[in-house]
Image (cartoon, rainbow, N blue to C red; front, side):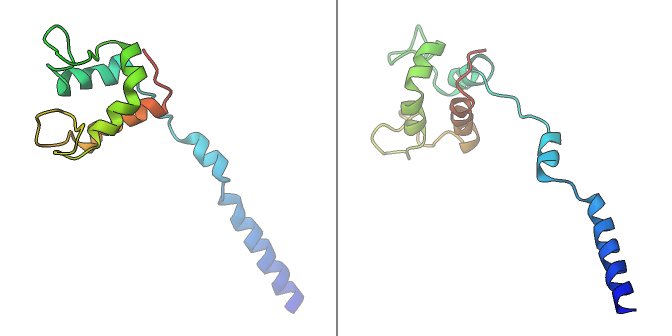
Length: 118
């Protein structure tokens, strides 16, 4: 009788496993998050938060309106927007508040996504 209940328990346990799915399957079903691009995500942010200093023709600083310039300077840009007001190199210059972390995350994600242009 003990053997019967052991077998019955094992069958019930194995039967319950049919509702489990491997982690790979569940990860594959999740929607892919679109990658950020310079044209769609980064340039509008620069135009909004880095103007007029880094936008031609009024800008007196390095112009961040082209993909190649921003791509070359992304590490410096991320470092400087992460500084606190009053620290040397803080951007945006002459502002008393940092840009929101959600906007800084756009620069970070764009870099992580491979710095796509379009």
